[in-house]
Length: 133
Image 1 (cartoon, rainbow, N blue to C red):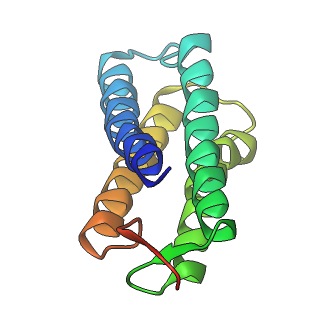
Image 2 (cartoon, helix red, strand yellow):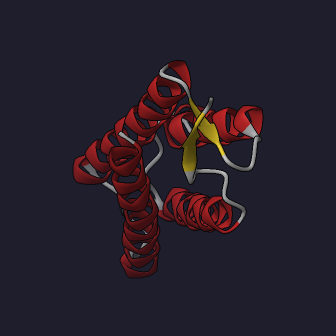
């Protein structure tokens, strides 16, 4: 199950980068018209579901007797909650705007989430998972 968590988290990292590139490209190419559309909003939903599934697998690991070697479980849960709700939260805060400024905001947030996720890997907040004896 720890391998599944690692796979989901790696997908999440690459998906964050892809969303950032997509939104940045849309913002650059927009010329006073809509820059983001329904496809992007669908991708944001998939992003939130992917982060939520990663968190659920992490919680399942915790409930089945595993813990993070770093021992910072609370920090892990807080980061994963942030990653799961922030993109839909930005959509709500911006009232569904899809103009050029909104595209830049989504690009910045996606790149921030990407860097946060990479930082979590470097600080061992997502693994390795070890069995508690």
